[in-house]
Image (cartoon, rainbow, N blue to C red; front, side, top):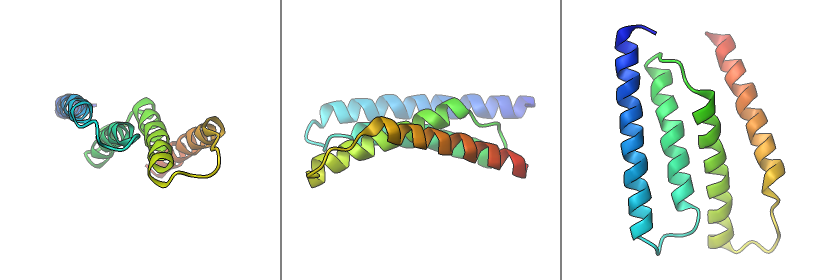
Length: 114
């Protein structure tokens, strides 16, 4: 990574942290929001950080991509459970394993295209 990419990456990380704390504060204040919205927002911030890195040709972080996807899945299930009152139990751990596998495979496939 050259100096411009390092500086840009640092700015992206700072923006992501700022968005994270703002989102956390907003969802803590607005307690009427459905369950799962906080986690979905955190997932979007983490995935968005890596999408920006990708488009700016800065190496992405598999760790934050994985955490972002897991947050999206967990938040999505919590949101769906709350809003739609599902009549069945959803076992999340196997789904997280599948999502983690898809992320790892997808990352490797994307790396192969470069």
